Length: 194
Image 1 (cartoon, rainbow, N blue to C red):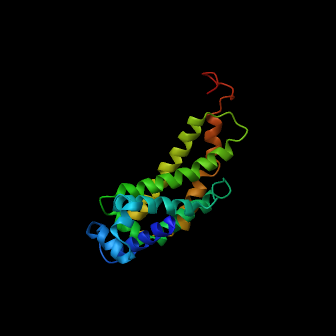
Image 2: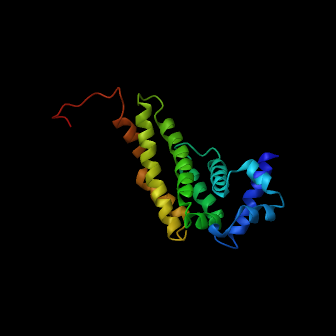
Image 3: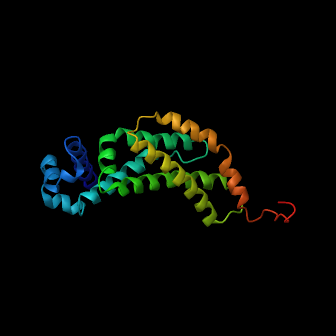
């Protein structure tokens, strides 16, 4: 029942965002639209920004849906783009408000989740420290999210398939190459052999 109520509150906020900007929406607006009382809202969320954060995390968990392997990362990233596109009024409104960092946090979290899955899969059988794998996943996370934020800032006009296609060509084989550079069991090169 709790998830149902949270999703109903989220749906009301999304509906209201079609009518007015985020900074003009109050908790009272949301509960009236949702036909619940304020106590119900505050039972689940401390404020509207808490609701937005929950919405982002909920969307993130649905967006990837198991697409976290080297063979499927393109589909996973495309699903992130599509989730953002399906929620365009919400994302654009939140992005252009004081809570822009919540959109960024959502994108960083979901993209890191995708990339660490790919890095872990590609690192199987290699002796690579966890912090090095995390660094590689972070590198790609920041690159991907930077591209996505630029796409959002420009109004989400470019076809996500085109962006993912460019990324696919650009990083083909690069994750494995990066992991090989961080291998603990890799023979050390001499100064002349570098």
